[in-house]
Image (tube, rainbow, N blue to C red):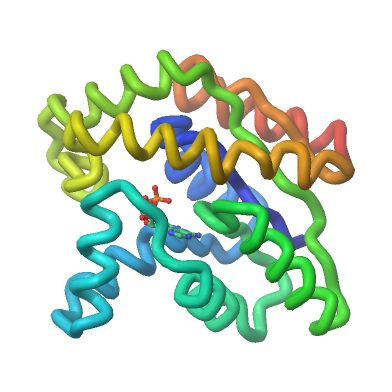
Length: 191
Ligand code: AMP
């Protein structure tokens, strides 16, 4: 099983992808997490990636492809969250998988109205939580949120069309537990 998981910022894709990976015993690969880890290593590349993330822009395709292809090396069952972010990456990914003699099983799209997703991001920023990884990310700053949605609309949303022959579209509104149930149901029906 090889799945890509995508949705707008604030769609809850990180949370749901982790749940799904657990439920289906898939290796969860989040390019956002991989990049955030790279920022901490203090290298020049790390700093460049950090600046890009903080600005709400996309890391360049060559770096994103490289990081993702390396992360899935040798894996048969994985769920990729946050990649691809644009059509160029999606095409490269298809080609890469084809060269490996395989293909994507499906693309799961978490559909959340922009207003709901924006509200969630604002909440994520203001709400104090004990767990730090989701709390006050630099790219959740109000000025950056707007840009992230713009990037999403222009670059990532066209993936809905690109994956139209293998997309599973799930309504991502409701509580996290409700959304998890909806995803499980959609996958059962699709299989
Ligand atoms: P995420 O955690 O998926 O929201 O990703 C956080 C940030 O990491 C994004 O806003 C981008 O700056 C960067 N990023 C993550 N995945 C990709 C990707 N596939 N291509 C380019 N940039 C990415």
